[in-house]
Picture (tube, rainbow over the protein chains, first blue to last red):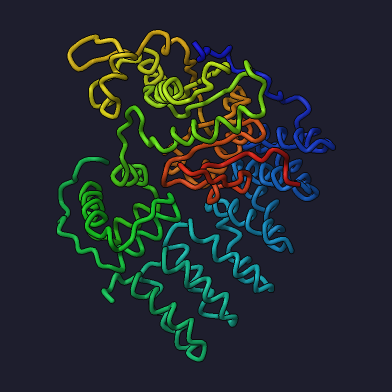
Length: 202
Length: 289
């Protein structure tokens, strides 16, 4: 009989005591185990935030972000927001994904993010509304496209509205299309969004 | 929210734009991909869910779906997927296991070494037993290694049924009469119990995929089958589960997901490994970074 019943799976999981200290370990595996074990631990947010700031290994950074995401409180959001400005696209994407998964905690930060002085941050922030309540996402994105000067930021907002927008977005979309009439791709994208939101047959 | 509610008119009009909006959401949320060519299939299921939730329009239903009210995403996925489990389901992955994966895994082990395979979630046991049966029938090196198969699920009732190993005719529909003859014992009309030797060779354990502590007790697997469960999770849980599964694999180990699932959309931890019979995901031998 080649199939053998395994002994009970090895129960060698790292256990708590010095978990926060282990976030400083020179060994990436130890830091990874510590980050995973601290997942969802609200008391560990300051330690996780500090570790995230200095962590060089992508998979450990991912685990720290997941740990913060599982906490899902304002402090964990604040720990991740600076990474929206990272020069590393992978880090920005990881931060967006993590923040997107905590729409309730992110909501209070959305207005300032969508008014940020950096167009790249505003553009990324539109993506954070994708998992939010539809009426709140619509309100935030309509406020943005009514004043936004950068066509790429508007386009990102329109893309999200195409999926989540409610009919309340239609007037703002029409105004945005008129404002960017000289940038043809944007009125086209807006016409698609309007059709989807109104359910109109094309 | 499975039963139709009174009060709403179910002759709801679903426009092509509604379908596109819905398909884009469904793909982003679950990885299930449908195009206009499947319009009839989509419309029928959408109409059913709109009726079952008592929604008055597509827009109303879509809002409810996005908010995942009353676990509507789970109901929707169930309506779009095959929920039935049976022996030799997604046989191409079993073929991939014996024609490619285990040869690679075994090449790193001494003869007589241990190969650990995990079926999670295993539901009522069809998958881990299928793995065992397939190995006995299709892997020439099966006698050269100690093969440990573990089946785990969060549902202890399912685990109890798995340990009993009694199945109806439908669960065995993909098995030849010869296989049924050799590996099952007739217990009643339309009821068959899997061979005691196989039953006793599989360890069944309870596990929650998103509980890191639970998952830390399941380690050093060479191959994990984790099919058709991650699509039910929200983004946060999917990410947590992916990290947990990574931790349960040996470096270089493989994970097989369901046909509509893609680890690349969930986590950057794994690398895609393409084989003739299936695309699977691999924990890199060494850490990147």
